[in-house]
Image 1: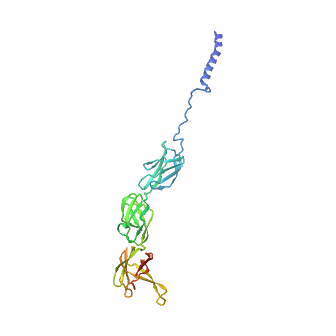
Image 2 (image 1 turned 180 degrees about the vertical axis):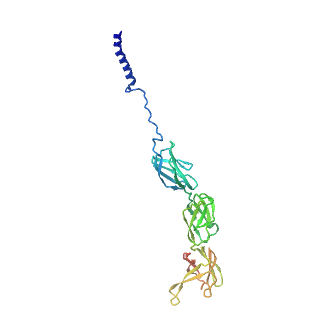
Image 3 (image 1 turned 135 degrees about the vertical axis):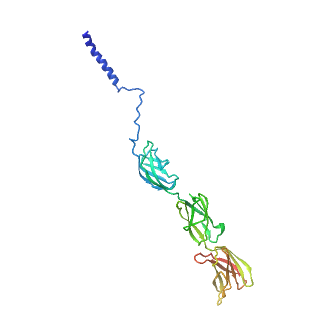
Length: 325
């Protein structure tokens, strides 16, 4: 009995050892085995969320802002105070966003990631929306224009009902039409180039556009009017005539010492009563008409020229040829 037991013991130990090695063998291939998923990322392994630069550091609604920093992901969100803004992420170090329509002021800007991580807040200034002036219609007004002929329309954007029209630095009355259109009447002012701007109630000011007031006299027609015993009216029509305009008459005359030769006789006639030495005069009717009372020395038609000249630097008209006595 003892001898049989001694023979069986080694065999029993061998069976136990084989069972143990088989249970621990991990080198044998397993069919349909699934790979274990990689460990999930978490806030502890993700890079910190931070901003190194904000370009530009301020802007009005609609401005594109670029942030440079670290830890950006496609799901990173921008906040201006409590306003959530979708961002366009170009990579882990750059993203952009557009300033939404907010009131002007200083806001806290910060980022928030999908894992709950947030950056520290940064100061960001939202600027007031500036009014934009694109054009004036018309951009030239005649000095003597009246009524609706002095009306000008401003085309642009971001106008408000409380906007102001600034003409040469002074506020003038205007009419609000829409956020893209205002209208005003050009004040009675000297000719030349003038400046027009629009200012919103938050002091945001548009750029400057130019308006030309054309004060240069212009003759459009010359016609004979009423005839009297020793003179007749020459009616001159056009624009931008003034009460103190003068008329220059250029006429060829024969020289007394040599009738075959001609000389140009130039005389300047002012408005008002004729002087004792000069019977001819210029009568101002309105800015579109003056009357030249001409005293011809004969009834034979002749060629001469006329030109209207305004005082100061208001200019002079073109020279117009006339055929009359």
